Image (tube, rainbow, N blue to C red):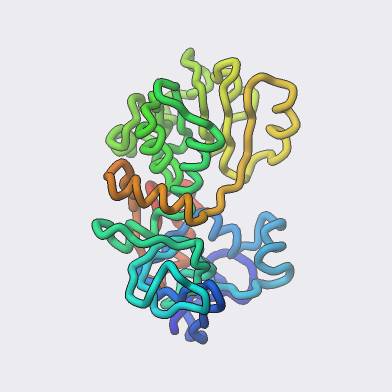
Length: 313
């Protein structure tokens, strides 16, 4: 099968299109014929092997497998022993290891059936980014109807889902984005949009119950200033200080949080329901063929990707 492979860590230039052996599903695994693979900033980190803790998961000196991509949508080709949820021919989406390939194996509990009205490209855009948004808004932020919520980076992969999920809960959503994406963010359910090129949300008078910060381009102190006294600041970029919010949180009534979102069957099932009820719509900014995966990752690394970037096979 064809796959995008890197044998060393580095820039997207280390990636090559190669012929490799097709994987075989183990017990409780499903072999998926990939129709589309969603990409996100985490895929850039794994290709570069940075930050260094990532290598504990993917290989210390060199990649153990070296096929990027963790989000997938496609058709079940075969199932391993003990699989009960799926059969060959089912259309599914979820997470796998190495989805930038013609075939990938995924754990049974990391997949759900694809809603019939969703394209493979749309489905591949969902798993990691939408689960991150769901966990941030529903679980960590505990967002309720009537609360004032700010999403910094509202036009990105996580942000476009977070705005929709918060709005579906009845929150009053403010989205922060560039001027070219203002109408998009409003269409997703934001009642207010702040153009970051003209206004700094941390210097305004409005106070927010929850801030989901996908960019981390402001200090912790500046973000806390526009939180309510018991508000929650949820940082979700991974490039800023990892420990500062955790060390400071016990000494303030405000909740300062970081979190790890791993897609499981429950999360994906909730998202599938939101997609079927049309409360959630994936926003795809750009698509690329498999051979152009390096260009797709470079686009993500600019920090200005709008919506999701998807590889189409």
